Image (cartoon, rainbow, N blue to C red; front, side, top):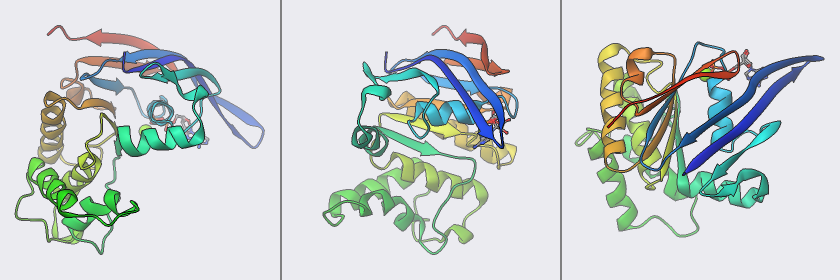
Length: 228
Ligand code: ADP
Ligand code: MG
């Protein structure tokens, strides 16, 4: 199993009040799967996704990635996981407003020690073409539609060829046409081998997944696996 979620508990502590959010959540993500975490607003989806991507620590339970528990990993190892294995997209695209689409997609390479070369530039063009933005590489985010901006964010997420993509409500700020386009892109990337874990409250979009994990009150309510 690529990613295992083993009996995760998480509470938030605020001014003396403890709010339990996850109460013993378990699920599995196989390599190449498209898994959807479905639940109402406030059901703990983002919290769970952040724990699954090592951004947040659980109170109890563990995440095991390729047989290695996050708990046993050093900080630099979880950092490496997020940098090299995983990628994330969110409801809002978080693009740099003063950088072109191409420059935004090049961003993940700019933290490297060596300057980005021809190969990285080719990867950026390829990633933008994959999300249907060929010819729009030089546009600033303000010169792109909301749907196109989200597609730039997807290109930026996949440019480093991650093994697993975590998507938190990637269609949340888009209208139906643009939301559908984003879903088709995610589905296409999944068919090419990318493992996808997507959070949504929109049941329609769960249709794209192989496995739908329904959350409510901090528990897994139901897991539906689509037969191939
Ligand atoms: P979802 O993504 O399903 O809407 P979240 O995981 O964002 O749910 O939130 C679940 C619950 O935890 C909500 O009640 C939310 O208010 C609370 N919560 C989320 N993040 C924090 C935080 N950093 N501090 C305190 N409470 C939080
Ligand atoms: Mg959320």
